[in-house]
Length: 430
Length: 169
Image (tube, rainbow over all chains, first blue to last red):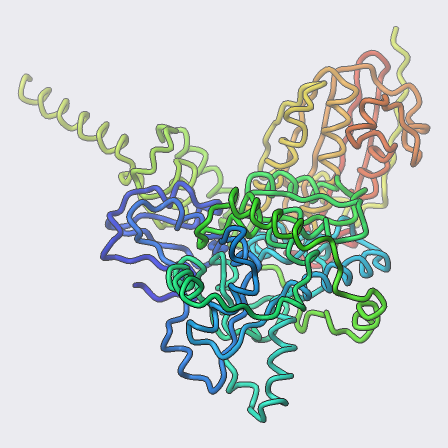
């Protein structure tokens, strides 16, 4: 595996150099060079689309290994709510939590109640905020990255409230350290994740100096062992703290459904996210208070590291919340007082990550832009990606930046060969 | 004869040369009246272009708001228009020339809250009467002229380094 700071790793042993990932990548961050997919760290938002697109299992998430658990004196599994959604009606969250402990964690920590807390805090924040509108959720880390690189103007629209997973990990880590007489660093907290974006957010967090989580295991990689543990041991942990409202956060629409404010929308999937963000940037949608947006079409249940698939997972969550009833676990006054005490605040500023222009100097950039347009005229516009770039426009961009050459295009090369042959034949005849 | 009512509203330019400076790059975009389906596409393309050219995000943001408003004005009220983008050394100038009904009373249209949008337009989130004043507010220079039953020309300039002109890039 090629090591890089992102959560998405390519395996040179498995990659055959096809262009499926390159064409699927929403930020055009992947090029195929010498039969190997190479990911541009500057452009990658860790959305994991490439993992789904790869038919050769050559792109893998960077997850923790069981050996990582041994580095800590006490370990905690913090499951994404999506984990509960991987099972049918016979396996309720208490049994999932119980099963998780059998896999080698000292305890589990549910975050559904923190989701409900954050929904309440978001409501309170919206009622006191002065804009700019609409405010945008920071729950999906891939959306956050996308805003940093592609929509830097929308950074002031981000809700300045930390995510439930980090708030819960911080709270539990501090309490455990006090209870067990351990240094907080001796406690290992591992997220059970549905996606690569969260893995990267632990490695390189935004809004925090360092994550309160130590690593992540993919739902898909622990699922088999977890199912076996659940079948083997019918025991159940307490579900007293599980918030039925909070559980809905596993699905797109869950965040706004647990809020009071109804002047809100949910945006699902990358295409729609781009559509809506382009328009917010142009000043429309200002009449809305809040936007919940996910790169995965179904929200977290649609993460690429899940097993049940988003449709069954949605069904499972709906069934679960229906069975448990719409009961809040959180007191509104408590949330407001915690908000005033800055409990929910980000610890550091979220900054733009401007992607490089064609050139630093305007005249030079314009010259390159013209060069690029001229190249594009010559390219076949078939977007076949055989050159290693996802489409002709990106190849033209790569060429003017000095990262590719026109002969990388198979159509151009073929034409050149034909011309050479013609010239050769012409010479012979004459 | 058409009644020619034209008015020029101009903010004090920080650098009088900027708006009339050398055009380094020019591109034309066509906008079709009533084409809600493609509404905002010209603004999005201009934004992508200026990002590649390395224009500061704040300038791009203000220009994009103005472009989007202007583009929607064409779609809602005019038959068709040309959007001309001119990149100057320290600014961007956009000129939108439409063929259409024109604006009989520009001073009225320039007042916040005034709008002739139909209920259908309002239902789509447009026509809050913010269009023209919003363009002017986000631009560093602004001018408009209109001839009833012929068309309207709106032109505005956004400086790369903000309203005050600022340091050279």
